[in-house]
Image (cartoon, rainbow, N blue to C red; front, side, top):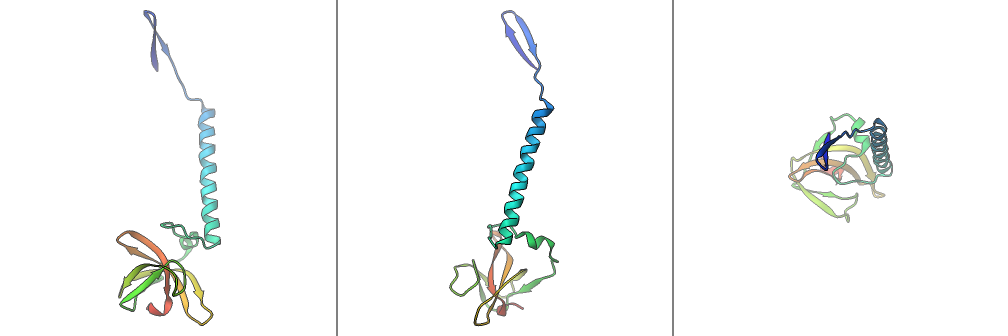
Length: 133
């Protein structure tokens, strides 16, 4: 309640929130959540990566798909291929989580999309599968 003084007489005004406005706000929030969910699904379908956000298909996959780096410095890349930008150097023995996405190059190399815990948080990228054990 708010008290307003008019002249020498205080007047008490009651302000209430209508349930209609609360319903409208909840409806708007629901629509925004649905739009964000649709964008997340769309991004996963078309293999668009969003930094720090795991692909939706990784949520429904068993978590027992860890491997470790078998070479001294394995390059974690933004996309498959030896010419792609390197985003991290992974030391031997580093545990990586396979996301299930792979890419086979015409000459036979297989690239795997992985997630790895780094000092900056979880990083997603691509590594040549032959260097994992």
